[in-house]
Amino acid sequence: MRHLFIALGFALLVACAQVGGPPRLLPAHRFGLEVVQEGEATTFRRADLRFAYVPGLGWTPPLEAGLPPPEGGRLPLEVVRAAGLVEAPEAGVRYSADGRRLRLVLDLPAPPAELPTAELGPYPRRLELRLPYFLPGLEEVRPSGVELDFRYEKEGTWLTLTAPPGRFYRYRAFGLRDPSRYVLDVYYLEPEREEEVALGFRYRELWVWAPEPVRMYTLQALPDRWHMEPVGRPGERRVLPEMAPGALALLNGGYFDGRTATPIGLWVRGGVPLSFPYGRSTLFWEGGSVFAGRAQFAAWVELPDGRRVQVGLNLARARYTAHTLPGPVGRVGEGVHLVQGERVVATLPAPAELPEGHWALSFPLSEPLARTGERIRLLVRLEPAVSYALEAGPLLIQSGANVFSPTAEPFRDRAPVEAVAAQSAVAWTQDGALTFIVTEPMRPEALARVLQEMGFWGAIRMDGGGSAQLWVRGQLKNPNGGPLGPRPVVSGLALYPR
Image (cartoon, rainbow, N blue to C red; front, side, top):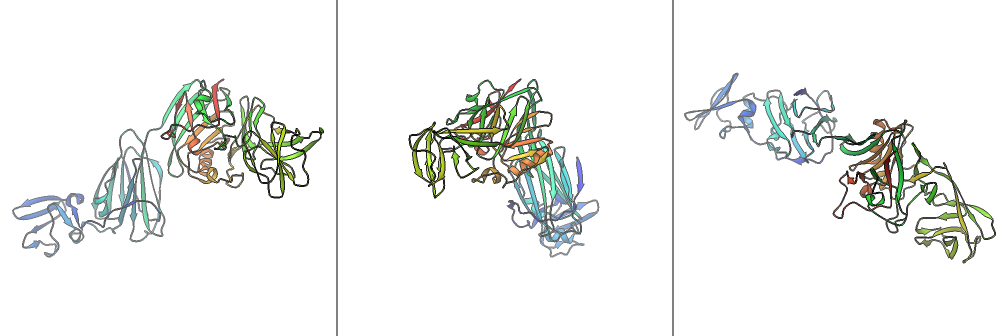
């Protein structure tokens, strides 16, 4: 059992149920009083105190006779004060409870002289706190999932909380002076889990704090024990286990166009590019070595007469720019060659719609490079020259440092870098241990901070939200399936024992 004396006052905006005003009648047992019926008199007593109420006569000394009468074993607040049962200042009470946490918010009459804080820490299921305030509003607090008991003393309130058995227990208290509030969070979370799923592979479910508790689902592979491959097919969406039925573990891959299932960004399998760079961070790996960063590339088009002209690629625009992602391409004042395979099928003014299964070349209107019907080839040289790559982003950890920046990478849809959503990531240590990660909803910046605190050498975010999925031995580990089941995706990462 943990006993703490806490005197906190602080301001925090929280969503809590506002209990009604303080009850005017409080149970005598909360003050350690025994209630005895002696004839018509109701006597309230304990070792150091005794007073009584007689109908028709009122209260007996030392109380004033005209104070409000009791109701059975309940005392009016005026009597509580007059009898000296409480001298501590009174604070209002609000609360919320969601099956994981009870939050108590006390609205204090004034900030105390000092504001010590209780850091997030464990408790052994039962937590006792002595609070230097009179809290009659606790009578109205009835949370589900945790037992709440308390008693009033002259100098404050003893609070006892007992959480369900077999949980993961943490609590914290913090605050500010203006406005003056005291907040206590008591967590009673589902237990953490850990199991070895194969030699050198360990599955873990743990809690991380961002700052609220977030469930993290991980598959850890020891150095030199794993082999990873990108799986899926551009233009096709499937449930991850269908892409690699024999994989030990599967994690969703990079971003894709929802309408056409076209990958957004670089995708290299066995040294062959299946999709070209878009301009965000990319996961690279070769054998047991893994790293992440921006792909360096150069692109050319080979013209019908054999000449090669260097061009930009997707977001890396130039005078001539190749486009590989379906949707509007080119800018006003430019022309667009639509190419299917290696043949120009149309030349249009920009912006033009790039259909699925085509690529395009935008150019100054007065400088076309080919005519409709002619053949041109797109050539791309990539650095580093690795066998496997999958573009995603943003980059989270590099060389042990938190490098997350919401403006460092091109995201026209800001959700991947700003929104609270399920996160998916690949992380690794300096010695080559690899971890697949999916979390409950949180912000990417919080994920980056947590992964750095966990000691990872590198980490990159993969596609998140409804696409975030971790499968181990054919079972979806994170609860991210809607009424239609897990979301089909275009690409994934399959992990095998080596």
